[in-house]
Amino acid sequence: MRVAFDPPHEIRDPVHGAIPVDAAELDIIDHPVVQRLRGIRQLGFSHLAFPGATHTRFLHSLGAMHLAGRAFDACFRDDPFPSTARRLALRRCVRMAALCHDLGHPPFSHAVEFALPPLDALALKPENGGGGGRRATHEDFTLLLVTASSLSDAFAASFDFTAAHVAALVSPQVQVEDDFFVESGCDLRGLLSQLISSELDVDRLDYLVRDSVFTGARYGEIDTAWLISHLTRHVDADDRVCLALDGRALHALDDFMIARFHMFVMVYFHQKSVAYEEMLKRSLATSRPDWTLPADAEAYARTDDAWLWDLVRRQDDPWARRLVGFDPYKVVFEAHGTAEQAALAQRTDLLERAGIDAIPRTERGVMQRPPKAGAPDLYVVDHPRGGQRQVLRLHDATRNFRRDQVTASVSRIYVPPADLARAREALHATWQPRPLLFGELSASDEVLI
Image (cartoon, rainbow, N blue to C red; front, side, top):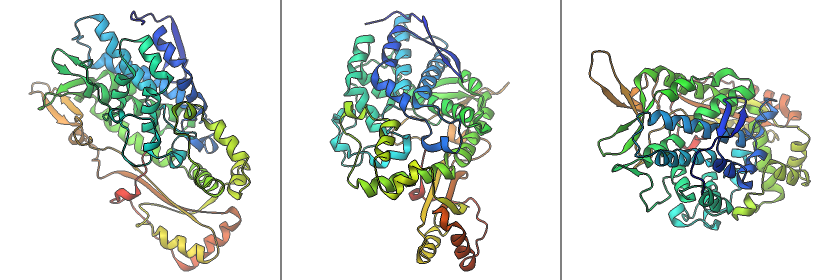
């Protein structure tokens, strides 16, 4: 077990500069399960719309790890720990959780989640989130790879915490029986988990800036340094230690949320990447209707973009030929709003009655969500000059908008390029489109990134 922090290594990152790592952390970074993320693009098919977007989940995970360490330092700037070793153990655990938070992503990231196997097929213990009779998610596979692959032994060999402690910061489902996260009678797990997954986590703080840099879209530029330097902690009415933000950074928080909204609309929902996602789904459904990704941890760890692309290349269905020939379906109709608001089903039916194959698709992103049931809130702590200290829930403190007022939703219909002109004529001749505005959105339309 390596205890002392020895940072002889630096990893060059185009976003954050030099990222220091010690020898114990490098053991995990170099593990094959983590290295797999080098072969998975961060934005799936987005590189076909934004040629620079070839960055990987591995690079993003390193960035999240780096920000997790900085966020930890900000939250505990008063150094309340009894020893340097204790502080280092918690800090390393947070960094490792951030590094591993995306391990379970399938090839092409979100685009292939439909092909994940049932959760019951995973060798995931109930205390680690197993069971439930539903289809597995990439979060479930993250827990599987952390706790039930060879990576689990690597944590035990390098640190004085276990894979279960890392998994506990990634998911609230994971049960930890010991008091590793308890310090001076206070359970820090809630706050440390919020650094990994919340409305103000290091995942978002990294990917917005990183995706902006690599796509060339400037919408994701946010003041990450200011936000992190103003992170703090707050003990709520239930004596839970929660993540909080100093009120001086509230405008930067609003800017962060607006930037995320713009990235949804302009980058994550780009029509070309969505078209490729739909064609891949149809290709696999046509050629391998019962196919799923491996449920075994070690077998899953050998899958990546190249592995799946090779599978597609060996298929002989029309969708696979379009994919490998870079011949996507084109958008014939687009509107901001839900499928119901855009009358997507009626328009699709009209095209299909005209003999045109049509693919309807609605994307929806939610700007800000309340915490899950039982999870601690995020807070804003304000220190007005000459006034009394104020504490508000983050959801109540944002000044420019509210969660239920601003959403990102785009509805489209895709058709074969050869039928594009005929599809336009059919829609315009029968149904004159009207302008659609943003409005209330139903949960059934929700697609989160």
